[in-house]
Image (cartoon, rainbow, N blue to C red; front, side, top):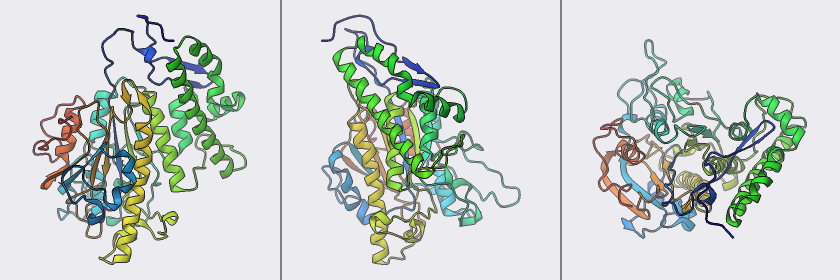
Length: 447
């Protein structure tokens, strides 16, 4: 039974342990009884995939509500009504301006900035991009969260074969300012320790974990004391949250055991999950925990970087993604590219379903979030930056009307959408990147 009281638990309640600071999920006890409805905490995420799509397998044939799910969108069946598809949008600043920089380079750089980058391998050319949308939003909604933003990847940075001979721009989509990239993290242990470790280097935190058994073991006594003061519903939420952390911690430990007989390193263990699917799900699970505990409110996730050489043997595509994207209208290669695109959406569905199943105040994490998924290429075979794939999931606290396919005038800037997202997260900018207004209709203001 929950007793009515004007007392409330602080939203920033932390369970302290050896080398551990465990933030709590949102509990009913964090809202004073008889108070006004809880103001939701907005979260925003950006998930990037490369090399465009096979448009006939991506774009719905009908507009508005109740559009049919195309082959690429079938994995989102359980999430019908909780996402929008936007077509007609473009990243024309990723087109060539005769400067010699590569299409893939420009695509990554332009996705969240809307600016054109020049070939930095040429004499006299310096890095000059712009602060990306995720970072502008993080400065507004993430300024009082412990970690303003997370930049994650499951496609390891490489200096392999790159257009214009330069891989620099393809390894992130997040820019702190016009010259400083936020480099991505691909190791689950590093992300886990960033979320749940407090101070010291990795070796010290590893020693603490060994001495206590796990992060949760080190805070168990304090958690039990807290649970006694909570109502039944909050005790259930706390238990489920800690079980999620335990399960993720076990997966990380098992991966490390399989990767090396003795984890002796410490600042950066070498083992990550063996498969793309395991790796991606684990990183998404960590991101859900980061949102759930309010450790961060903004993330970018580079699921597939431009020029990616990753094969996908689990779905029958042993060739490199980039090679497949240059299909030259060969039906067999186009079918393989479409399989890759569908598989990426399958991974996205894992994240969205988990967010939809995670309570947050008077709704779910997905209800209170906005996740933008897409690419800065439309036709990867021709390196076209027009009609790029864009998917918006989540309601952002009721500001987004979901379940629709919106078609805009061809080559409407993606930055019109980004500027609108910023508007509705408290950032007011007359212009962003190559924006020339706001989307009409604006899917974010129709909720």
